Image (cartoon, rainbow, N blue to C red; front, side, top):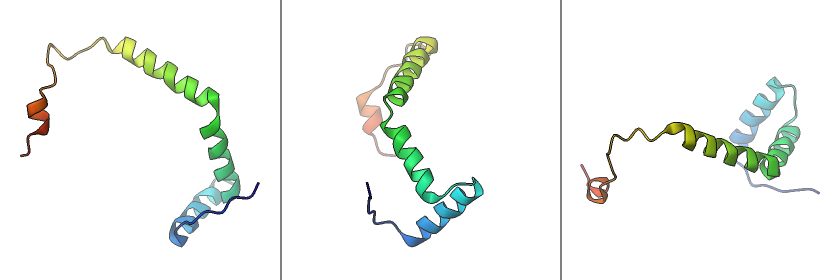
Length: 75
């Protein structure tokens, strides 16, 4: 399938140079990114990491709780 994108020329040139430094074409880099993005394994892995981090965190807030008023105050 072909895909057409509207992208700034400078961005494309910078990305092409980075891809080239990795020994890849820009097309290959974009394809690999889309494959990773759409991979269910990626989502599952990220959810597992979030669960692990939340369990390991052990809540170090020392009793501090969000104060809605403080959050919205402008300094």
